Amino acid sequence: MSNNIRVDKLKAMLQEQPDDSFLNFALGLEYVKMEQYDAALAAFEGIVQRDAQYTGVYYHLGKLYERFGLESKAIATYEAGMEVCKEKKETHNFNELRGALDALL
Image 1: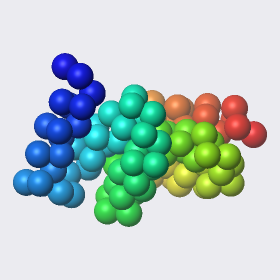
Image 2: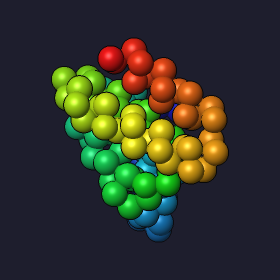
Image 3: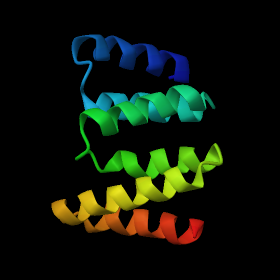
């Protein structure tokens, strides 16, 4: 299935459930694959604004900030995600964020 078809399907599902974090996350990942980084950034930032407990988004949002040369935003994003992961006891995501932060610093 092409990226455009997946994007269209995700957008259709989001019309029914616009605040669904998983669907927005999947859409953001599709935008990254298509190198539509501004659209991916908007999708990921929207998730953090609506659902700060959705830990999977922090790594990808931080990586986009790095891509845009926004290192301080990337650091803050990784740190915020690590805090949420600690609260939720999500060791795997915490370690992934810690690795991204360490690599950036």
